Amino acid sequence: MPLLEVENIRKSFGGTQVLTDIGFSLNKGEVLAIIGSSGSGKTTLLRCLNFLETPDEGRITVNGELLFDGRTRSKKDDLKLREKRLHFGLVFQSFNLFPQYTVFENITLAPKLLAKEEIKANGSYLGADNYKDAVDAIDKKASELLEKVGLVSKADEYPCNLSGGQQQRVAIARALALSPDVLCFDEPTSALDPELTGEVLNVIKSLKSSDSTMIVVTHEIGFANEVADRIIFMDNGLIEEEGPPEQVIGNPQSPRTKEFLSRFNQFGD
Amino acid sequence: MSFLNVTLQLLNGFVQNAIVFGVTLLFAIPLGLLIAKGSMSKIAPIKAITRTFVWIIRGTPLMLQIFVVFYVPPLMARMFGVPFFGFDRAFKAMLAACIAFVINYAAYFSEIYRSGIESIPRGQYEAGAVLGMTKSQIFFKVVLMQVIKRILPPMSNEIITLVKDTSLARVISIPEILKIAENYSLEGLIWPLFYTGAFFLLFSGGLTLLFNFIEKKLSYYKI
Ligand SMILES: Nc1ncnc2c1ncn2[C@@H]1O[C@H](COP(=O)(O)OP(=O)(O)OP(=O)(O)O)[C@@H](O)[C@H]1O
Ligand SMILES: [Mg+2]
Image 1 (cartoon, protein in one colour):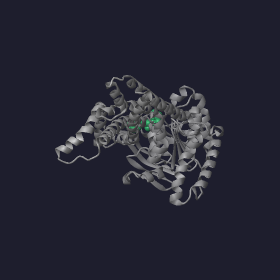
Image 2 (tube, chains in turn purple, orange; image 1 turned 180 degrees about the vertical axis):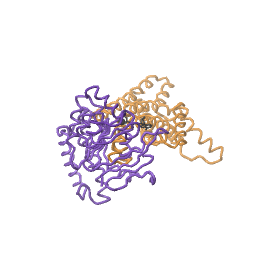
Image 3 (cartoon, helix red, strand yellow; image 1 turned 45 degrees about the vertical axis):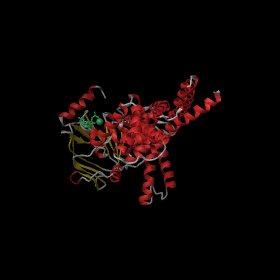
Image 4 (cartoon, protein in one colour; image 1 turned 90 degrees about the vertical axis):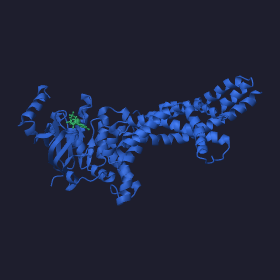
């Protein structure tokens, strides 16, 4: 059974169809890269998965649990919604760190808020049955994540004192702190100076493992080719072509894909 | 008239100013938040009513509003033949002044709050949302501190204006500092009138220091 199953997602904004029958599935540990020209609906798709937008139609299933069904759409329930959201993480193009908190606090804020409620509701969080132990566990995890993204020395800095690349790595750690089933990246390097994209891409590469499932929207074709298990090329709200990188990038079938990729090859990648 | 005597009398008057000031801050700060919520409401009639209200309050002189609050209720009471409650005149005047000031300043504060809240990028809300925070957690843990930092300069401006505006209370015979100084000048003693400036300067100077201190406290991060 795939970890994530997306079926027939449709979304339109005021009469303009932005997503048309988007469907794909993703196994645990797989990395999916989504490429496509500007306006093709990549961001909208990630926003639908993270429940920042509500699709008009379609189904989203994670681990066999039906999270969204366009036919039986329930009314917005804040607590239910966040429970669903916790299956997904999202790293934004513009980082969106919380400026008034340190790097460490940025990472631990949401887990600590969650721990308080989880312990009240279910009696435990991260294996701890009281808030104090949960906080210890959260702090420990945050330190490990900071190590993973190579920013241990910046733990007590404020975001305004970090470079864009460092901020984005913090944002990645912040998203990972909640252990989402699927971590989504929306053009994580396109707001960065070219010399800073490498450090962020390397972190994402290093996250690839048997139990981290990721969807990366990117314009870095070389990176997608290297890190992705599968690639989706989106055009005009449709999945135009889908397959392993050797196929989609190495030997594209659709003329739209060919045209899109040729624009990159012109500049020698 | 000795200098000390005048000082004490003026100080007495300034207590009235301080009362208006304190009461206004105490009530206008939270009331302004309520009005700000109304003017950002998704429910169109609430939004329209609140914005009209703010427009009227900001578009008419505070002095006129003080007159309205002071004179209209007793007139209405007389018109309908209900006895108007029996506090003494000084208390009624102070109450009227405070109500007028609270409403007026709440309207101004609400606009400052609104622009502060609207200036927080949507990404901050969305980042909180995808991290599984509830709406109230996002507001109190993520947005509020940033709003406070943003509105601090316009709020300090407005609050220092309030210090000076309190002397408007004299139009309904509240014995505030300018009123007392004016009485002296009617008796031929002019200098107390200028002396009142020292009281205002001292008070607003203290506030300026306080705001600078808070601003510095909040400068550990940039938005
Ligand atoms: N909230 C919205 N309201 C109206 N239209 C929207 C909204 N969000 C997105 N769109 C439209 O949907 C289309 C797809 O946008 P989307 O941001 O998903 O594209 P994208 O593939 O991420 O593009 P880019 O590569 O530029 O980020 C665009 O035409 C955009 O104008
Ligand atoms: Mg996009």
